[in-house]
Amino acid sequence: GHSDSIYALATNPTASLIASGSVDTDVRLWDPRTPSMNFKLRGHSDVVRRLQLSDDGRRLLSCSSDRTLRVWNLGQRRCEQVFSPHVDSIYCVAPTDSSWSRLLSGSRDGTIFETSISPSDKDGNNPACASWLLFRAGAMVQRLHIPPSADK
Image 1 (cartoon, rainbow, N blue to C red):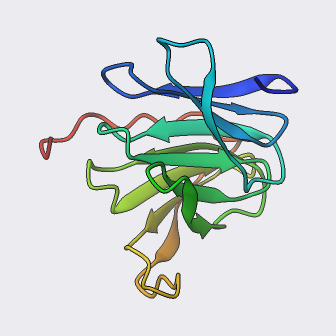
Image 2 (cartoon, one colour):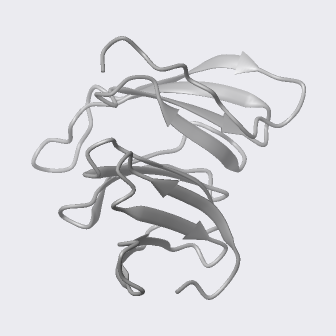
């Protein structure tokens, strides 16, 4: 398991997959029917603060105190995209729709950003990706709630 405290947990709707994020900077994936870990994802350089699994269990969002958002492809067990819209620790991240074309993120710096994402080209470039400031709060943003959309 993790070598330090767990700060983030996520599961898919059928609870067939659990993701955990920790102070040890790793994201680990688990099958709750077995006592062992499936695999580990490495890429963050500071505490993993929040995780979000896609409904189909194929993708994972993570955010960290290293000021990055990461989109992971779980089938390939690799990070597909990295975004750094904030100037301080990112405490929460959530997709705005089931296609994950846009993400909202909240930070210790009190900002909420929206990030538009697109699939990477063969060289890993993301020409259509952009982030913009939506809101500046008077305090850190630790949680976002996005109501279920009609696109599901």
